[in-house]
Image 1 (cartoon, rainbow, N blue to C red):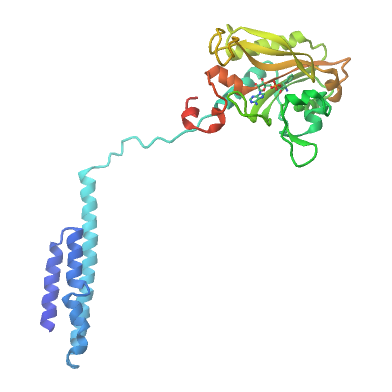
Image 2 (cartoon, protein in one colour):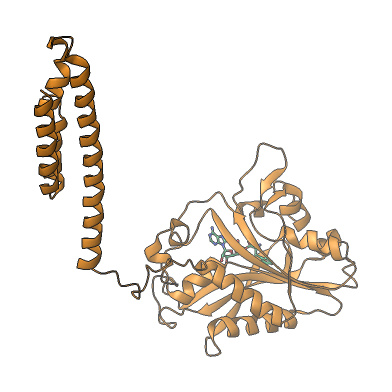
Length: 341
Ligand code: FA5
C-alpha cells in the first residue's frame, strides 16, 4: 500500500507538469484529488485496513495529499503568470495612445445669453442686483400699482403658496421696489436677473418657469430718450448694428408711458415666418417710465426723481439668436440639443 502511494505521487506530479491549460488542470484535479480519486479512496477506506497498518498508511496518504495540493496550487499560479506574459507580449500595450477623452460640460445656452446681457449692461453702467423668487403679493403686485382685483392681474397667472400673501414672483419687477428701498435716495442703475413663474399653458413660446432680466434706472432728469438710447444700444450689441427695431406703445400698470420693443425677425429677416407670426417683427421686451406711484413706494419723490425700467426674456432672445423654434428644449435636458451650444 505504501508503494502504491509513492507511485501515485510520482505519477500525479508527472501528469501535472504536462497539464498546459485550465481545462487540463481541472481534469488533473478531478483525477488525483477528486472525491472518487484513488488517493481519496485509499484515505476513505483506512478503516477497512488491519489496525496495525492504519497509522503508517494514513500518515503517508495525507502527506501525498498535501504535496499534490501544494503542487496543484503552484501550477495554477505558474500557468496564470505564463498567460499574463503571453498576453503582454502578443498585444503589447501602447502607452503613447491618447486616453479616453473626459466629457467636459458647458454653459447652458440661456446662461450664455444671460452672461452676454450682463456684459453689455455692465458696460453701460448697470450693476447686477439679485432679488428673491418667493415674493409677497404686496411686492409682486400692490406696490407696483396693481391693487387686489385690478384687471391687470390677469396679465400674470400666479402660483400661490399655502402661506397667505406669499407667491412665486411672476416677473422680476418686484425687485424694483426692493432695490429702490435699499438705495433710496441714491441714484440707481441696476439689472435684476432671475427665475419667474407663471401658471400658464406650456407652449412652444411659453414656459411655466423662465428667466427675465429687469433693468432699472432712477435719478434726476432721466427721460424716455435715455430709455430709448439704452435699449437701442442694447439691441445693437445683442443682434447686430443692421438689425432694425421699433417701439410700440403698450400698457403696464407700473410704467407710464409704457412701450414694447420689437426687433426685425432674425429668422426670416423680416419677410414673415411662423416665429414672427408673419409680421416680420418679434417682441423682445416691455418697458416704460417708472410710474410715480411706484417711485413713491420705493421711497423716491416723483416730483424730484424719475426713472425708466424694462423687462425682457432671455429664453426668447436665445431662441431668436439661434433660430430655436420651441422654448421647451431649454429644460428638456436632451444632450443632443445642449451640445450644440
Ligand atoms: C412683464 O413681465 C413686465 N414685468 C415687463 C416690464 C418690466 C415692463 C418693467 C415694463 C417695465 P411680460 O409679461 O410681457 O412683461 O414679460 C416680459 C418678457 O418675459 C416677455 O417679453 C417674454 O420674453 C418673457 N416671458 C413672459 N412670459 C413668459 C413665459 N411664459 N415663458 C417664457 N418667457 C416669458
